[in-house]
Length: 73
Picture 1: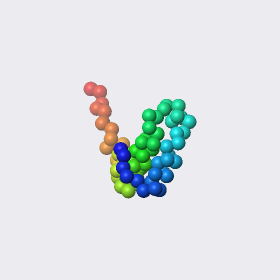
Picture 2: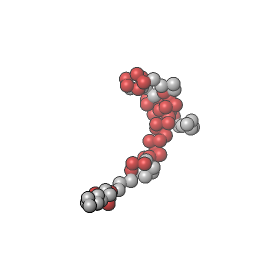
Picture 3: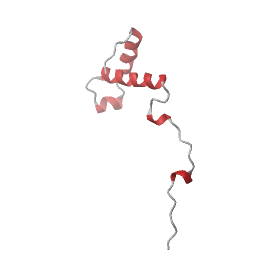
Picture 4: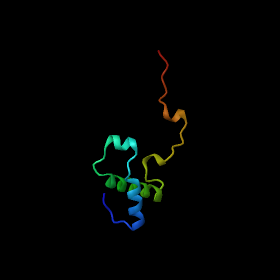
């Protein structure tokens, strides 16, 4: 996912491209491309709070989510 960036975006990418120890242990073929993708997705979620799948809160009671058990015969 390569996009054109202004200098401040490039700085964000470069600062995020430095791998954390656990990321370095797992390895990365292209840390800068990975950082670009992460920041792009983050920007999308920040612009549209409903873009991430877990951002919609459901308001249901347990009676609405659990299938009632029939009593034994």
